[in-house]
Amino acid sequence: MKSVITVELPQQSYEVAIAPGGLEYLGTWMQPLSLGKKVLLVSSPPIFKYYGERAIASLTQAGFDVAHILLPPGERFKTPASLQKIYDAALNHRLERSSTIVALGGGVIGDMAGFAAATWLRGIHFVQVPTTLLAMVDASIGGKTGVNHPHGKNLIGAFHQPRLVLIDPEVLKTLPSREFRAGMAEVIKYGIIWDANLFEQLEQAPRLDQQRYVSPELMQTILTRSCEAKAHVVSKDEKESGLRAILNYGHTVGHAVESLTGYKVVNHGEAVGIGMVAAGAIAQSLNLWDAESAQRQDALITKTGLPTQIPAGVEPDAIITALQTDKKVADGKVRFILPTRIGEVKITDQVTANTLRPILSKMMESP
View 1: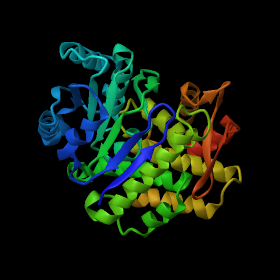
View 2: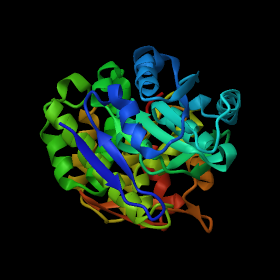
View 3: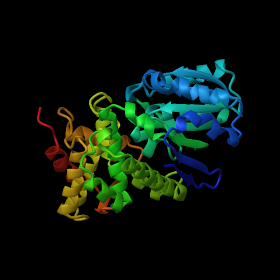
View 4: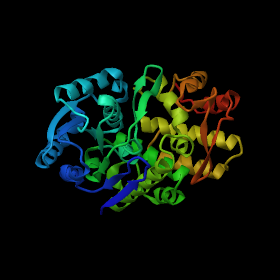
């Protein structure tokens, strides 16, 4: 089973290839794209241990001159200091404007490698080879790159589209279950914002908390439908001036929770799960959607093994304050993406602190 989805953009469209076993042919996929001879592969030690040599062998066989750099995994390392290490490696390998940075890893590696590619020599080629479910269905597509600031997530960044996204579902076999569940949060997100049929297929699956319980057929459907949704939205709104904001469903409160816990208590997908529960409750309180839909969403999040409560010690008022530094603030108002039915959402800046506070308080985890 192989799927190829095109992200249609005015400047330069690109393909998202979902190909089981595709990592072995990375160099072959890249050859026709005129990406220059020099390649810097950016990865992390756990990923490189499993897949680094295979990726380098494929690139070398295709005629590329490859160097690599390994960075520690984890959101707390997504910093300007880590970015500097990529720049140093780019300098040492003498990357040119025709050269390419390849990200082999999850969303953190992809974001940092992409931002390095966006800014080195004012922009060089970039290829995404995501190795986590979350990166496959979300972070690797759309050109959002960046690093974190101590006071907020992804506040330093740039839009820089990849030339290719190569997704090999077989690498998910080595993905820890917690990271698999994190990726499922983004898949559920697509069901809520865009694809009611995908949502229903997830509801019908016997288990979603571990990759081994998901059939190859359902996994291909999950990847294809999620990537199609992301590609469609990005094609319509590359720089997030309108429609693309719906991709932030669950991320508003989620980013605040991540930041306030120092990126050490919950991972990104877990935070998004919490954020989706909050967004659903907000929508219900504003009479935008019904209790049954909210229950279906929360049941699916629970079925996936994701948390639905805010970690102990994170106070509602701290979250409300943190929201003011979110990238989605416009004219001092926080934009929320709220569901109106499964498969459809709306963007609003009419959620007040008085609306938020009781909902967040109710979601607090017991100490």
